Length: 286
Length: 137
Image 1: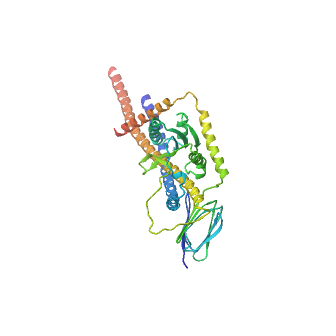
Image 2 (image 1 turned 45 degrees about the horizontal axis):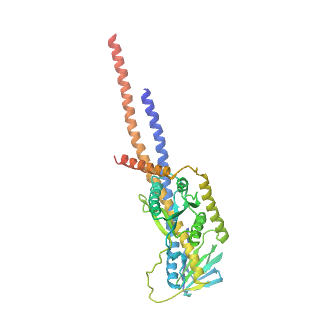
Image 3 (image 1 turned 180 degrees about the vertical axis):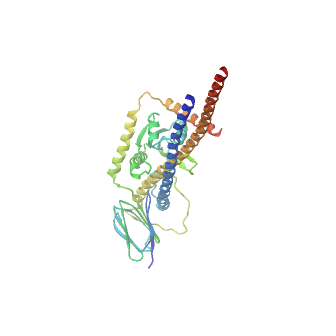
C-alpha cells in the first residue's frame, strides 16, 4: 500500500493548493469590481478637463502652451505602469515585451530614453535591464492615491518643460473587459491640440488671473489625471488577469486531482489483487 | 427661483452633482459668488471652502485644497485638487521619486546585463505559450 499512500498525500497537497487559488480568485474578483468603480469615478474629471482645455486653447491663440508644441524627438521619457504584485498571468510580461520592442525601435532611430517606473514589478524588471531610470514609485497599492504619483509626474513634467526629453509616453495595461487586457503605449506630451468643434458663436471666458496661468495649471492637472487614470486602469487589469490566472490554476488542480484519484484507485486495486493471489497461491501450495 | 447646476469633481471621484441656487467659491483673486446665468468664468481656486445653497435653503460645503473653477451660464464645475498641493511639497515628492530611482540603480549588480533580463523574458514567454498549449490540449 506504500504507492497508494504516496498518491493520497499528493492528492491532499494539490487540494490545499486548489483551496488557495480558489480563494485568490474570489478575492481578485471582488477587488476587480472595486477597481472598475474607481476607473469610472476618475472619468468625469478628465472629461471636464479635456472640454475646458479644448476651449481655452482655441480661445487664446496667441499663447501656445509648451505641452502642445511638437519638437523633434531626440530623447523620449517613458512612464511604465506595472503591477505591484505577481501571480497575474502574463500581464506584466506582455507589457514589458511590447515596451522592449518599442525601445529597440527607438534605439535604431537614435532616440535616447529616460524611464519613470510605477509599480514593483516594473521596478525589479528594469533594475536589471540597465535603463536610465529617473523616477520610481512603488507600493502603489490596490487603491492608488493620486498623492503617491505626484513625485513621478513632476519628474517627467519637469524633464519635458526643461527640454531634456522631447516626448513623453506612457505604457500600461488597458482594461478592455475582465477577460481581455491590452498593453498600450500612449503619447502624453506633446498633446495633439484638438481642432474640432467649431462653435457657432464666439464666446470666451473671463480669466482670473489670466488665460496663460489658468491654462498652465489645467494642463498639468490634465496630464496628472491621465496618468492617474492609467494607474487605476492597470490596477483593474491586474485584478482581472489574476482572477483568470487563478481560475485556470484551480481548474488545472481539479484535473490533476481527478488523475491522481484514478491512479490511487488503480494502486489500491492492484495491491488487493496481489494479496488475493498470494493467499490463493499459498493455499494451493499446501 | 432659477437654479444652476454644480459639479464638484476630483481626480479620484465625483464629490457632488446637483442643482443650486447660489455658489460661493474661494477664487485665487478673492471669494466669488455665482448666481444662475453668471458670465463664463475660468479661474484657479485657493484652498478653502466651496459652499452651495440648495433649493430649499439647505447648504452644502466642500473643502478644496485648490483647483479650478469653470463657470458657464447654467453649469458650474469645480475641478478640485486631490491632497495637499504646494510647489515645495510637489518638489519634495519629485525628489523622493528620484531618490527611489537612484536607490534602485545602486542596488543592481553592475555585471548583470541586459541580455540576461531579455533571456528571462523570452523564457517566461515560452513558458506561457507552453501552458496555453497544454490547456488547449
